Image 1 (cartoon, rainbow, N blue to C red):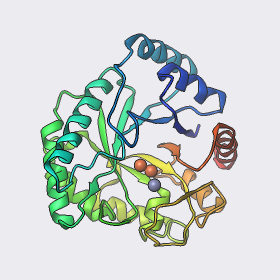
Image 2: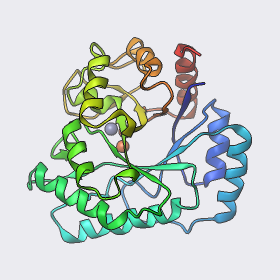
Image 3: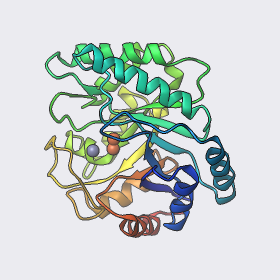
Length: 277
Ligand code: FE
Ligand code: FE
Ligand code: ZN
């Protein structure tokens, strides 16, 4: 069975997200660990977490994906912004220790004017201060489109970060289809080649999740604008190949398309229809 879900609002808690996911035909979901543009966070409700875990077990909800806020910039120039990133990530991972059925995804960061090499160094540095061998959660670097000074705009940069991290066994990658296509990897015409390249540079064993988004812009635009599945430059046929690809078909897919719940429900059913059981 295809493992697919979408981005949900975390405002009503885990059980509410689990119920919402089931209602729209999803068997996983993604959510922001806190306000995407800020740092505030409610205390973790352990009763809600427990109720969710029972519900998830009963309804076959697979691993879920916690997304760090966009304001987390591990390679900011400003010490106080990097310090916020460190505190946010370590607090998020402390909370996620209560939800072993989850993974944590973050945008590597924007180096602003420091250069990618310095950015890579700062990101790995932060990960080395946060990650411990005991922590149960896999931490995923998201592939980025290369907008502005984003780090993670190609597979080499992700590999360079992972190379510098001590707890490598906790590190994975989340491949965003809109971002990689926008970043210059032609998953429409050369999916096999892109996957081989990922394997050669990062290693397919690190690939833990896929953000499944169409793109509003043409190939290699470096703009990062998501589109609904089938309405963008990637197109439904390419998504049929992506979800069925032997290297990808068992991974969890998370929609981050511009939709409300009913739109997500339609996309989930569209993609389930394209999946070869
Ligand atoms: Fe993201
Ligand atoms: Fe994404
Ligand atoms: Zn994006």
